[in-house]
Amino acid sequence: MEDRLLAEASQGDEDQKLVEQLNLVKRQLGQLLLQPAQKLSAEANQRIEALEAEVEKIESQLAQHVAGLGQARHALGVGLEQVQQTIPKDGALIEYLRYSHYLGKGKFEPRYGAIVLFSKSAPLWIPLGKASEIEHLVRRYGTLVRGSPEEHELSANLQALYKALWAPIGQALPSQTKRIIISPDGELNFISFATLLTKDQQFLAQTYDVQYVASGRDLLRESTPSTTKEVVLFANPDFKLGSTVLLAKADNGSSDPGPKRMRGSEKREIEDWSFESLRARRKKEMN
Image (cartoon, rainbow, N blue to C red):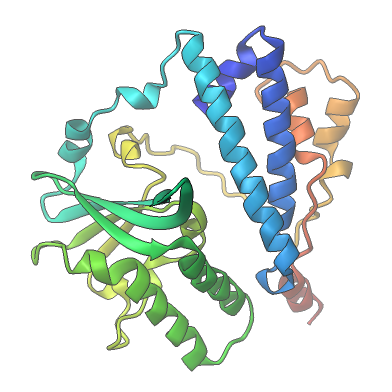
């Protein structure tokens, strides 16, 4: 995100083109990822992998350009010791990572692994396995939780995810560990680690207090309690973004200087999005 913002602010045509290309590819990827997993064909899954690779390629190019501008990411200023100081003594931070494993002779294979951090002592690296196998389980999880599966089928999936994503890590944790802070990566962002099941039908949340962060660096951020007393509720919202007042104002060149004004780049990012209505919510209202 920092690379992108710096590139947007730069005067270089090449940087601007990279940002536009990144926005386009992310829109295409977003449309595919919004489809139910059971409706995705083999061709669509291949397209998703190709678009994800293209996003990584463009982001890498942006990173090189930003470095050339003499800028350094704020995130790079955070050190291991600083993160460890924020980890509770009875806790552990688990940073999941999707990476390319080198197989030799110029060949690579996507895999998952985890870096486990404690308040003291050296980090642990725990390999977890092939991304294709783990992501198959994750996609199946997504299909099951959206429908009305047989209880045993969902339980089997949660146990398989526990075995693939947690069992190797759990074995490496000290016995006094009570709290786990999870930073997912890739498609692992779409599962609830708290609901993973042991072979004894125990949820992970029954053993540990589970917390989520986008990155271990988030632990360094000071949280400011909200003072607002307003609550916003959404029930069967209209997802036709192209017809919203917000986009209409952007089309009409609104002169409103306030923080709610949408920039041209933001408008371009969402104008092609489409979302299905919340059928269950609508059905409930009709009943």
